[in-house]
Image (cartoon, rainbow, N blue to C red; front, side, top):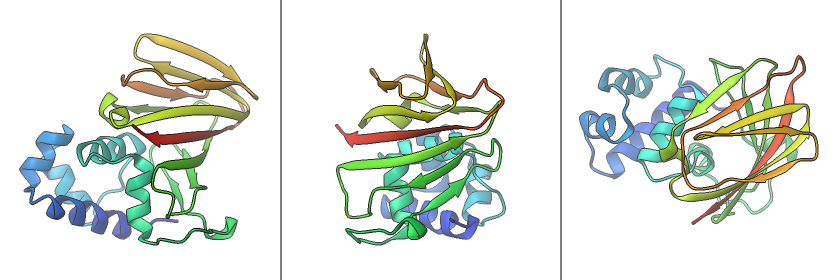
Length: 183
């Protein structure tokens, strides 16, 4: 499981790698400079939506960002060693299934608690193609103006980048896999 310190180090390292100031990252991500500063000092726990904005500003998918958090190039990753992260705001849990050495394809399993609503900005989807496959429960995926109501076994290929929301309208957790490929 990623700690706030691991995330803080990765955010700061990615910002510095680009030669950006806190103001530069704030402008690219649409996030306040003070929030980024708090994140880099591990004084705040980032939400999934916030990490989506930051990774998008870096030109990374959320999966690529988390691979940098774990900083490993392994081709095989055992289930117990797969990277996990939980959104402190929604309880959204994410497990990186694909090994760190998989550069152009990511598989992520998500468990979305009952009643959860997790937004992601369009910039999170700019550099990727994505597919969502529901394993259990109900998922409402809002893609711009389009609303997709999905049940176990349903699979959706996302369209052009748009602001998105993952909603679980049910009273049970929803589990789904996201496959991400770089454009």
